[in-house]
Image (tube, rainbow, N blue to C red; front, side, top):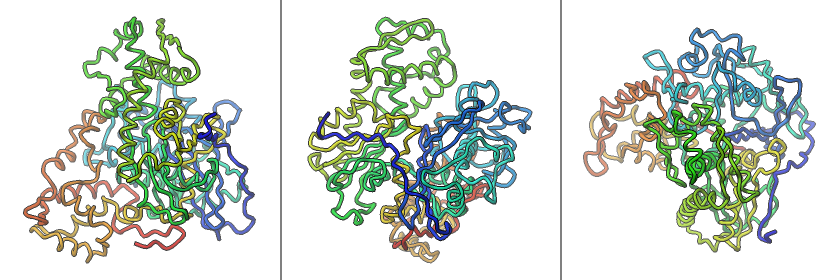
Amino acid sequence: MNPNSIHSSTVLESAKPSPAENVSKYAWYLGIDFGTTGVSAVLLNGSTGERYPIYWISQGQTESTQTSFRLPAVTYTGPAWSNSEQSSGGASSAYADTPAASNTYAHTPAAIAVGVLASSLANRKEGVFIQGFKPYLKVGIPYYSSAKKWEPILQWSLDQPISLYWLGRSLQALFATLRPLGRQGNPLSPTEQSRPNLVGAAGLKPSTLNAAMSCLSGVIVGCPAKWGDTYRFNIREAVLGAHLVENPEEIFFLEDAIATLLAGIEGATLPGVPWQGGTLVIDAGATTIELAVVNLPENLKDLTYSQFACRSLAYAGNAIDQDIIGQLLLNDEEGKMKDEFESSFILHSSSLSLPKAGEPDLATRDRLASLLQSSPLGQALLEAANSVKRILQQQDSYTVELGGKSCLVTRRDLENRVYKPFLEKLNQELNALLTQAGIPASGIHQIICTGGTAAVGEIAQWLRQKLPKAVLIRDTGANDSTLNCSPVAYGLATLPLYPQLLEQQTQQYSDYFLLLELLRALPEEPLPLNEIMQLLEYRGINTRVCYSRVMALLEGKLPAGIVPSEAEFGLLSSTSEQNPDYQAIAEAPLFEKEATQMYRLNAQQGDRYLRYLNTILTSTYQKLEEPLVFDLLVPATV
């Protein structure tokens, strides 16, 4: 065993017994780690500092029950599950077009199965099975258009369009499993209320858990670095729709990598080490690899958000699977696998192109993911790629048998064709991060490496070579994840104990709110920057803390996802690609710079933006009328 390595299996330590006092006198916070493949949660008693990991008790179609600290992030809706489905067009059309009666996440006729039960229903021909939808929540904000349908519509697979609205609805259903069944304001149907998913908390009595979940002071959700306000807006809508809390200001966000470090500092899931000096965090999941570097102060209570440097690499476990398919399974020397699939629609698709190994190449990978999910052949390839990744950690070669053909894959080929370009890209990201943080590689004293993709042994080998003097702490989730709670969830629940790690500016003033304030305040004539700032100050905005972001808006850097980006347009259905609202907004710049620090609002575009944003806000819980005033255990200072 490497003396500079510590392995953590994230085994749950027995929580302290629940408090006997009146639950309502404590400040309770819920940390939620929403990942591409699963959801984990931890409850914090902010008054005592005790944390209680949440577990789900699920019952499938058999009488057996399963207990897990991780809820699979999968949902199913269709006649096989819900007898109340009223759409004559079936589940597909209901998913794309059914409006809500009063708001975006109000009750709709279709009940949603989640987790284990959803997986058991996935093979039904009727209905819609949704998984791996987290990245789509940053594409845009769903809204009910003047054409009487939800926009945008995503091309989920070649034959299955689905509204982004329904992905938000699916997330709400996952979050709703955490809410006590008898809570007032329950938005779910009677069918959903009798859901086969119940929750418990290690160390808490059911009655205490239900009482605590009914009076939460806040919910903290993890997010990848730089994913922006569109993703956060959609997450807030799902939390509010699940009635975990009632107000947007009670929902907080923290980068996943920072949350992972907090879990280690507090000793919740990671082994204790002297937490001082240069520290690198790598949280490697299915969609992204999150990195953070920080020079820890001697007194950890002096740690602040501004001391962190964070980056997000849009290449992780799912991209590795795709590269195994493209570089190995369809590129073997004898060509057996390729011959087998040459007659399928996948390889005959004129739009098919394989991504470059090790590169994010999001548009190409999104298209490939859709193609692979559109046929049993493609799904079999994905399963085979996952097997290759897992088995070649233990042996030198593996024979993949698929479609009556076989393909020998060696560990050497896996390392050279897939892992080598991946690690080269990861090394570039780490070098850029160290430069950003101003910390040399020799200044890193400890490394935390977590997440499912961290199980790839080549990552640990690379880290030991690059940072040989650093202590490597690995938490790969190698043990049964049903027995282990996510370190990220522990760290998120810990945030109220370290309120100085909350990024207060974006919490108080989102980019969408600032944009709306500019649209509401600016006249048609050009104004110098100082007068624009004065107008915002008259409206009660502290421009000192959001100056740079207001400047970015005036310079044309609008919130990512206000309309789908060019790279994400490939995710849209052909009709949503022609969305007239998107076309109108893209027609001309919103602000025109007429001289140095002199800006004019394009009146016509301003009217279009206001109509578009107001249309969105008519069907959401968030109204963006006021800054979010928050209190995370201690008074916030801005």
